[in-house]
Image (cartoon, rainbow, N blue to C red):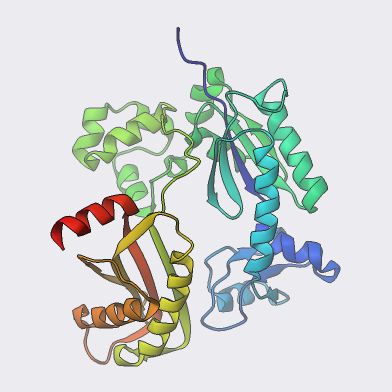
Length: 358
């Protein structure tokens, strides 16, 4: 007996950080706002839809955003509030399925192939979730409904804000064919340019190439590109996706030389360690130092240890020492630093390996 066609939802809160600010401060409603610190070094975390009309976007430098929209209102982020609302939203999800894969505070995949709420369809479930979010949080969310994660994510962005898009199995080919190839996940600007150079501008163009042909140009990822163009994505919704990395980073008010970064590195190590302590039965053995130069080049240096760090102080020591692996000229200046922990393994596996080689 064939397995039932999966029914996947992707729920994405609309301009989440900005929407929370506008909900909680009536004076901000209808105003173009950017969630960011008003600083020449800051970047926009989220822009309200009023601000987006002026071209203001996430990850844009705040100074550029203000040039685009001189009346832009800057609102500092409040992650305590965002976490609280995110928990409310996830509680709504849990009424309908236990198969929930959060991607961030404001979006998640849900597998509703087997419905727990008695609703007649995945579409009805998406509508009920969006209605509950509006009623209980005062915010709006957009939803995509499709047979897999890739399609559901594209669909959730289709009718934003406060939208719903359903892609049924028999609609997949017609939906995908005219899309620009840049809409496929994993196709960044460099890959998109290479595809355009091959005469591949749309998903329909990708389909005219075999998997073997695409692999000749893009390696193993060529096979994935071929599958996506056919609407294929077998990834399951993973409710307990293991942590891959925990990190904290900060951008400076002024560019700084490498030897002046120790205080910030140690402060970020404290933040990263505080998050790491919330992990249950997972151990991280890799320390990562991230740097961004004044001319926006990103450098990372990492060290995988035989034994995991045991304190924020030790993490800070290792991260500071990783500066010795940076071979940039002494007069190089840096605008950002980050400290991370990665290489996570299960605690039982770690204890076994550590015991064997101690």
